[in-house]
Image (cartoon, rainbow, N blue to C red):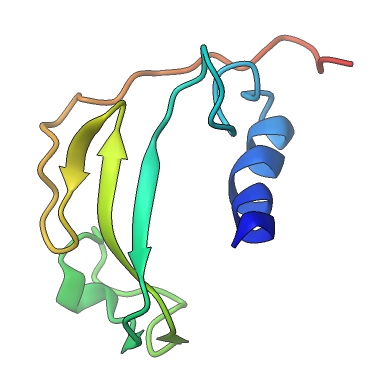
Length: 101
C-alpha cells in the first residue's frame, strides 16, 4: 500500500508540478485522504452515478478494495456511496512554472 500511495500521489503530483502543495502527508500540504476497505467488487461506472457519460474503460474490472470514504482538507467529501462535498468545495492549485530540483 505504501508503494501504491507513492505511485498514485507523489509521482503524479511531481509530474504535474503540484508537489509543492500535493502528493504527501506533510505540514503545509493539502491532505486529501481516501480510506479503503478490503471489499471485493466489480466496477460499473453507470451504477455508481459518479460518471458523466455512464461508462468507463474500467467497466467490469474486478477490484479487491473499495473506497469507503474520502476526506477533502479534513472534511468527509465521499461516504463510499454518495458525494457529500458541495460543488466548488475544491480549490485550484497552480502548477509551479518550472520543476523544482
